[in-house]
Every structure is written in structure tokens, then in C-alpha cells.
Amino acid sequence: MPKIIHYPQKCIGCGICQEMQPDVWRMSKANGKAVLLKAREKKGVQQLTIHSSQKLLTARVAAACPARIIQLI
Image 1: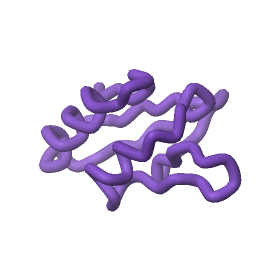
Image 2: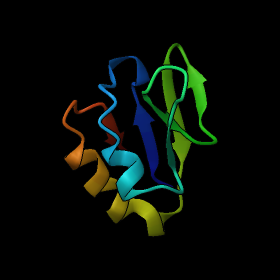
Image 3: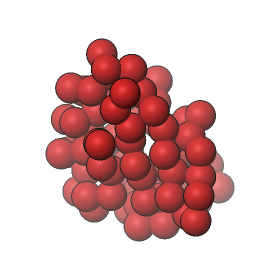
Image 4: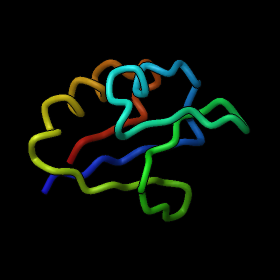
């Protein structure tokens, strides 16, 4: 299963991830940065296993992120 890796501390808060994939991303009201929904966090890095059907869209989100803080593995 594919996995999203997100580094929220480096987020610039552009919101493109939420616009492209609103079922997976939200913008925090507290700090304006992206939050990976239902993710596990370890040492400041968020991780979420996704269904393979979401892989293509997630790859597009990662490529669109101007801060390059989203990875798909």
C-alpha cells in the first residue's frame, strides 16, 4: 500500500493539497498549515497509508506542492 509522508513544520500554507485532495488534507485554523487527516505523527513527520486508487492523485498533489514537503512512497 502507498504511503504519504508529510513534513508539516516546513509547510508554507498555500492550501493546494486541500484544494486537490480535500478528503485527505485540511488547513489548520491554529497555524494555517496543512494537516494530513488520520495520519500518524512521529518526530514531527506525518504518515498515512492510502489505498492504491488514491496513488495517482496523491502523486499530483506531491508534485504541485511548492514547498516539496509531500512524498509518496
